[in-house]
Amino acid sequence: MTTTTDNPQERGLWTSASGALRDRLCPGSHIASRDLPELPREDAEKGAAVHAWLHWKRMPWQRRAPEPVCDYELAGRCWDMECKAIGAWLASIEGRINAEELASMVTYSEKRFWLVLHLKEVVIKHSGQADCALVCGQHALILDSKSGWLEAVPPQSNEQLRDLSVLIGTEHPVLESVTVQIVQPFAEPNPPAVYDRHDLNVAHLQLVDRIKQSNDPFAPRTPHPEACRFCKAKGTNRCPETQNAVMKLSQTQQSLIANPTKELIQAAKLAKVIAEQILEVARTLLEKDPNCIPGVTLKPNPSNRPVTNPQELWARCAAHGMTLAQFMSCVTVGKGAIEDTLKEIIRKRTGQKIVKGWGLTLTDLMDGVTTEEPKRPSVALKD
Image 1 (tube, rainbow, N blue to C red):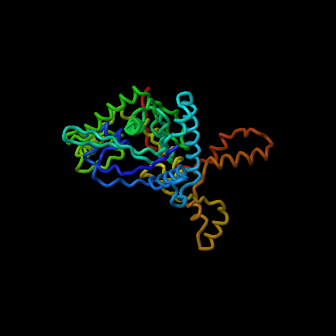
Image 2 (image 1 turned 45 degrees about the vertical axis):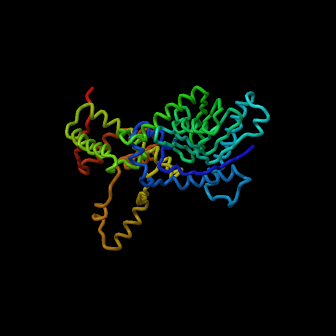
Image 3 (image 1 turned 90 degrees about the horizontal axis):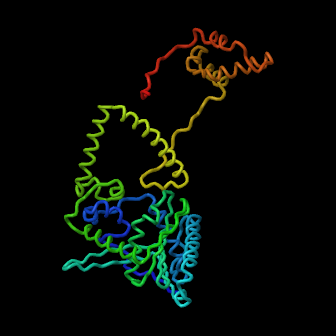
């Protein structure tokens, strides 16, 4: 078995597999953003440390540096999943490889593969970096390790992995199948996807067509939530379309607020429920991994400090000259707690489980000592 970690690893100003989805949805985004600085990602440092450890682990005979520092528990789980995925892949191709091919299997770690197109007087390049890739005979496996909690796009529809399945063929043109799989310890596992020779040919044609458009200086910019998510040109003068979109959204928002309809109110109620659920899921994820959602963090709230010994508090306040009337004006009485406590006292005194005449008793208790504070009505949909 041979192993390689070829360079150059830098993609430069060319398109790459990691931007496949964005480039397809917005052909003009590549040229608009290619020379802009990378956007800061809070989760990048942690993920890079795990990837460095996995690379160190895959290359025991090429170690020239000490073991990288990272989240060893997370990295170890990724490593175990990688080993299992490799074992399952080898078992799936067992009848299609011979001993010689198995012995000469090639393993790549953090390898960037390149595709170079010569179009008349223009040269276009496209690349993709595979976390881990193996080639055995006419078959290849590509593994993409994810250290975060957010679920990745499944292999069957993952355009980055489809690009990589084509790119690995630039160095191994005889491949009959490429299996792609995501390694992610903190997410539901997805089955691998397998590209046969026909699939690879179709994917190659689609890739070439896409990168031609992405390198066209006149390619249109078409804002899309997924395309704009990590686009460096979003909201800048490189992409007036997103600036206009924000302005139009603001105008539309003001118009919707000023003219509520039954349908808008119904949507607002549903959106409120969904928003609360999204925030709760985000809170749970961030409690497990503070870096799992780029640009989002948990903001500590002050702790509640309820008074648990009112008698002692009254004594301390009285020592400073506070009267009982002044103290009671600061006290908020929970009517529910009063009812429960008084019921329990009456039950113990009478020996009966049911407090008879409680409605009248409650009325007498509250007579003259409560006020009615009307609340604004709620907005409700008619049946």
